[in-house]
Image (tube, rainbow, N blue to C red; front, side):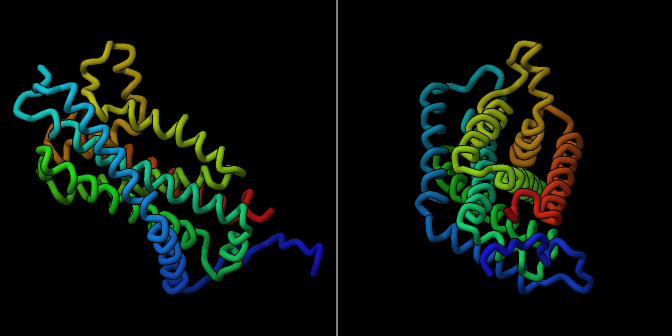
Length: 271
């Protein structure tokens, strides 16, 4: 069998019939077990790092900033910190998992499974969303003693949290497809994900920024994810809530379509 190369995988071929729930659940469960096996990295580390951000900013802003009325500074930054943890961990889960599968060669086994490309993407993204939400809930629990607010609108809060996690899980899949070494994933996380999340009004109100920088913030799609989540939690918003919903849906659809297409053709996955 030496020298034989597989040029096609069953997942790349159209498959009729119902959704393969057993296969989808199995891959989803595999990803969850991988996350649980390294819980110090996947759960404890992001909670501690987020709390450090909170402590530092609360220490700096002991009093309410002038631009906040009727809400404490902790209540203002808590939604941004929580969603930042959700998004970064969803991204880390899919990007690292797919890259490890490529490096170890196990991704070929997954591509050979009787799963549609959309089912593969759903399983990977679903596990990443689960990790993001679990980390977000843990962060929220630890922030509550500092004075974090409970959501004004629970359904909208859950919607934005899940949608933001999904967007970054799909972005992580795209990164994992293109990456060939762990340095590539680290570079994407440090040079793309971190700046987008930290410069999206996570720790501050964009209304305080000079006009050129403030206008540039509105071109950052992550701003709308955080602003929509903050609106759902506190009722405060700096952009129209409907715009946040539309941007979130557009990002999920675009990244989802790209991921399904990549898995369908096996782009940079079969070699």
